[in-house]
Image (cartoon, rainbow, N blue to C red; front, side):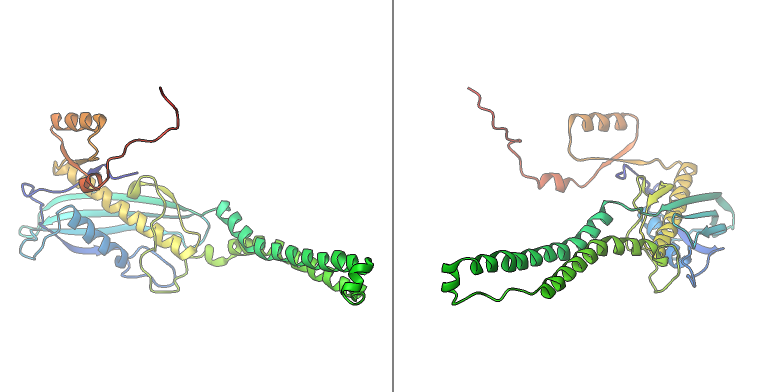
Length: 322
């Protein structure tokens, strides 16, 4: 689903570009044997989120408020098909001048990364692996059988053709045919099972079910496939175990940050900015007017995308009209 609302603090808000990170506790600095939520993943996400919301202070002097985060429960599975993760953290904002708390709340998040079961992609892979050698074996056998069983027999049994070729052509022996049959059946059989065997072997790969850390990668290559982004509780993830674990870690931490910013905006009376398409259809125009009449902040998405599109003459239909 697209992002239809956004949170950003304006210069009129006291937290606007005034927050710095004081400390993060209850979370390891990095992963070790198994993939786990860690500060190497969390800090860049937190910095990015604060920057996007116009909360991060540009200088130490501008940082009037300190963000303190204390994780009391942080866990993710290291073995299994569907990997789950959860976090519970206290987010606290402190006035750096007085030490007074201006915000504190406990934020919890959870996510289940679903293991991709057998699907059409696996069937397609099995077909691609098996089909080429299988059809090659059929073509080779058909060519040999046509040559030896039809053409040679036709020449040897026809006097005119025999004279043309200066005598009969030596036919393949029964032993040669036995070798051909054996090679054909082996090639066909191995080809047919090669694809399904490869798919099964990938399913049985233990690395699909263990989140062992084998490299220095911190972030997943791609996010889990979720319907509601960071607020989703489940999503289809990667088949590789370490990659799936990294997707879980990123998801629960992104969800924790998102819930914190939503809760903070409610306490600070910072309203959502609504995002509407720049298409300006009648429905969008009506929604735009309704939001503005209700006193909501409204912005559009990138209008240059709509402006760059050439005017179309419509979808043509071949119907003769007099």
